[in-house]
Amino acid sequence: MSTAVLDRPVVAPAARGGSMRGGDGGPTLEGVIVRAWEGLAAHRGVGCPVCGGHMSPRYGASGAAPVGGRCKDCGTTLG
Image (cartoon, rainbow, N blue to C red; front, side, top):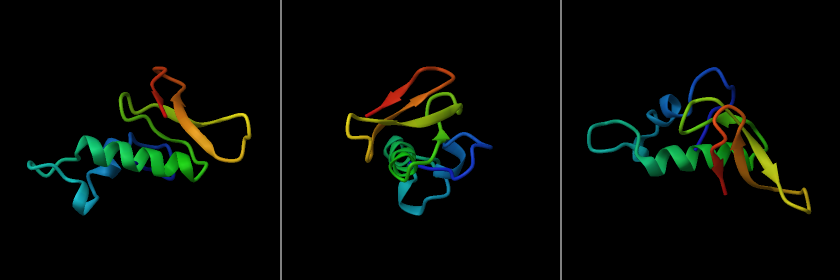
């Protein structure tokens, strides 16, 4: 799933991906989640796929790689 800067929800950038479009030309759920996860895995904040708020990477005990993400606005988690 992802945006480099948190100026827009992840849904808008996900709509740009050619293979991530639904039948109506909009983003698919898979595309939205994949782009968000790609940003989190790259240690970047992304737009929350649910509310468009700020989702930050969450790290496990090793701290080396993100194990998911959590939205600071609505509490949604990935991972």
